[in-house]
Image 1 (cartoon, rainbow, N blue to C red):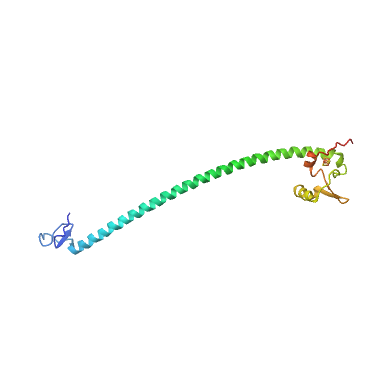
Image 2: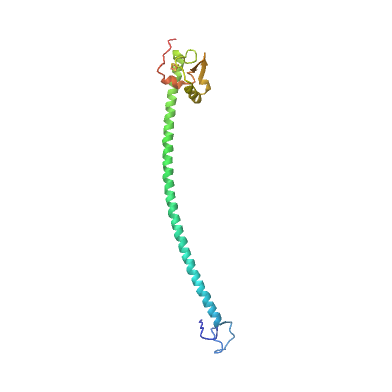
Length: 175
Ligand code: SF4
């Protein structure tokens, strides 16, 4: 199969130049002008392909940069996530230790609040409380942890055993 634009007309398929070897009816005849049009269209197609190739190269480059940024982000995220997990572990451990200490203090305080001679009436007569402390104690131990006795605000030791546990005024009741 061949094509030539030197002839007036050529045939694709049986490859026959019209007028020279009229041995068979041409299946498809392409005029020289048509060949020039095809040539121009192929040239445009080649240019389009070059542009497309360039665009693809740009997109690949962008994706590569984006991939790098994603990897960086993932690395930073893993680092932060690891630190958060570590912090959670420390806080959890500290919380556990805090609970243990609180339990021991509460047990000791409960015993002292029942045997201290200052708690015989159900309120501690050794401590006088300022209003700022009262507010804080109520927030932590509840409103029933404080009683007004004759205009004096007193602690109910059984409700605030932590104070008894650490109290320097503790006196063992003889009775
Ligand atoms: S231990 Fe301290 S706080 Fe508790 S009842 Fe005795 S004096 Fe009051």
